[in-house]
Length: 115
Image (cartoon, rainbow, N blue to C red; front, side, top):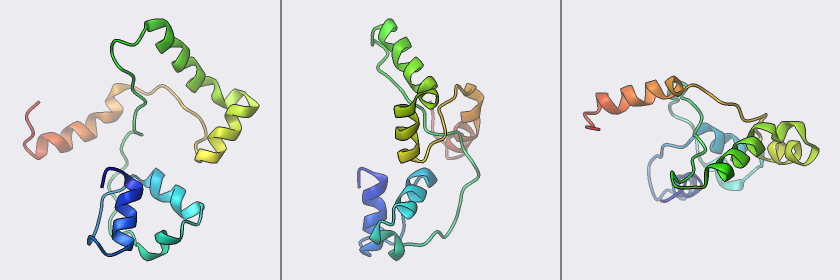
């Protein structure tokens, strides 16, 4: 479906029987009162995983990478940034250790994916 939103809409329209959707996206749709969400239900929740990372192209200018990182990490310290974060239902961005994604790597390995 190319997006979590489209996956939820497909379930609501009974085009599919189920879909895997990030809880951040589902909770946002629920809090915003999107009408289609009432035609869905959660049937299973996975264990917690690290939040989806913010990524940039590896060849992006290193100075711009640093500027982007600083903007994300300080948004909660600025009035406009706090408003944007509040609209997204995010408290703040933080740097996390790569080990936060080990459970995802383990899941992939358990499915037999190579590299």
